Length: 263
Ligand code: ATP
Image 1 (cartoon, helix red, strand yellow):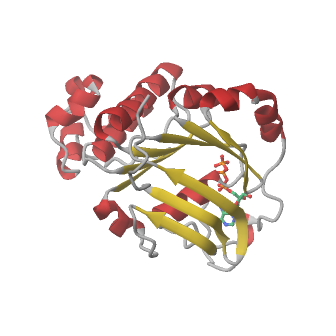
Image 2 (cartoon, protein in one colour):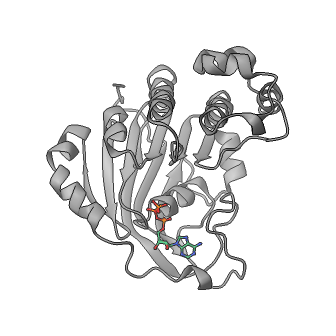
């Protein structure tokens, strides 16, 4: 596990964050901090508000109220500006150019062969292969190599292991842990594999219906696993608008995207 020096400034600080779509807050009163070298797991059932929280921190959605400071900057910057400052967002959608080779994907991302293969030796024999011909797990390794290879200070990882085989999930989460330990990357991790997330996290927050309902160290959360399970059995945010009448998740890669922009 990493050390999180007390005097160091947080990479993410949310206070009283309300976030959502149009004027409807599906995330309410969220306080959250991520320190350098720390992995904070954000857990909760479908529709709890994890992605909305993540996208607001990334700069893809504006906060409705409350404070969000990312890398010490409390202004409302879009993701591309935050990315330049050292924020990487990785989602379950693989961010690779399917028509390009693995090597060209790395080159275009400004990531060296050595860096990528140092993280994922599995990529070495695949350098000439088109990314579209890689397996889902290989594509996600390439995505993560591209994201971490640019030495971000903050990694926002939203269900990057979705649909992948358990061994691949293990590999990917181990690389995330190593980035935190070895390079001080702060990580906000949304992950459906609760057990694996608790294995690698320093702290965990559990959301239900848009609010944080449990928080603590992985050991503390494991002690309350009964409570965690009941959170998962409970439903989604109560006041969420129907997606047929909602605003888009701007730039979020197309998932859940609606077109009319109304609230
Ligand atoms: P999952 O694990 O299923 O991804 P989540 O915890 O990430 O869920 P969110 O995706 O943040 O939850 O969704 C929180 C609430 O916001 C849900 O009720 C959802 O229906 C609603 N929501 C999500 N995207 C939109 C949108 N584009 N417009 C309106 N409401 C949305």
